[in-house]
Length: 170
Image (tube, one colour):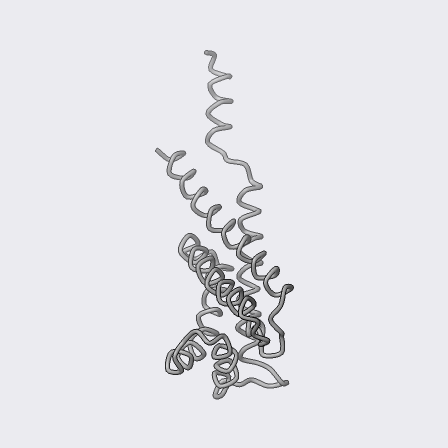
């Protein structure tokens, strides 16, 4: 094999395509922004911030699913908006991307499971996903399922890019 052919082969194998990284960045930023918007909607509604009492309103939405004891409902209502905010920031920053994308996927899977159960039981409730004024229905299930597909794509992309880096560097 000639020196030129060998140089071309090593150059193309050492430099991965740009578009997978660009798609991964676009996906993680979009997903992170969605989590931040969801947290914001739970903390800021009715024209003002509700740092002191947001959990009361959100707890009502969580309790309407009839899945958890009231002590767990209150705990979830206090923690979840802040967890969504931090997760969104981590996704946008790309910090711990494999972990944050995997946790996002798991969280969305739990949300979709609860929403599906409520729909099957015929509960006419508010979703609680983006504040307190959104009725649970087919549109919310489709939207959150689409977000799950995005989260899974970001998680798989993060793992594949990490794997690609490891194989290229060795």
